[in-house]
Image 1 (cartoon, rainbow, N blue to C red):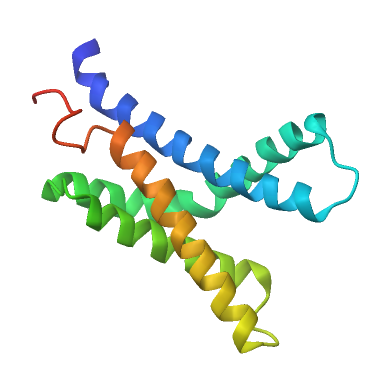
Image 2 (image 1 turned 135 degrees about the vertical axis):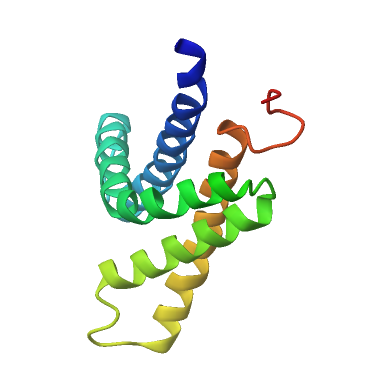
Length: 138
């Protein structure tokens, strides 16, 4: 019974680690822009940003990750594209850039979050066992 839970637990840990990376990077950016922010605030910001990343990404991930697992997608490229697209769309919608778009800001937000989303997807890909070298035999 416990052997059957190994894969879902690995997928969950990959998701949590990817969201934690997203939360940490967002917390570092927020701490950099706020003067007088120290380590306790950075830790609290990281926790809050990780929760926000989990809330924003849970529904799309509940649809896309099972489909990718069912289809047996093991290539990094597919996960990176999904992470970049999810992160870019979420950042544009959350930032309010759609209300009064400024092209340079919109492009900057989209590109930065696309790279961050690809990095988070890479963390998921490595931890969830999609890497052909690191994954255990099925």
